[in-house]
Amino acid sequence: MRVLIVHGEAGLAGIWAAHLRRGGAVVDCVGAQEDAVRHLSTHPVDVVLLSLTLSQGSALAIADYASYRRPDTRVIFVNNTQFFSDGSIFNHVSNARAMMPEDTPPEDLTAMVEHYATH
Image (tube, rainbow, N blue to C red; front, side, top):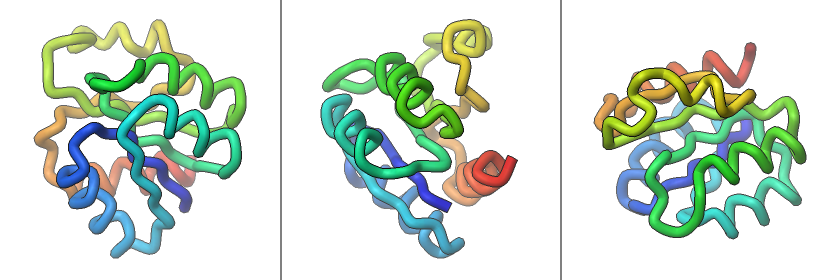
């Protein structure tokens, strides 16, 4: 299972990555749109764990690029605001599979990533 974490807080991304790696995932972490697009253009990815509130770039642009460049890649959004809390993200992003609060326990995020990496 190959996972790309896109989040501006390296510490939090590192915690998530450690949990995923314990489960056998190959995990890369980036903090900005430009780095995510560069990674997706050169590496296959099963799941992108993507912060909806990036300070450098657009999460929606990353999801759109993944849909185009890596059509089998699934996106799990994490969010720390009420933005898209009504579920409308699924109307805008075809490869979105879940929207989870950023404070979801890492083991629960890992379970979701593992689920969507295989389905």
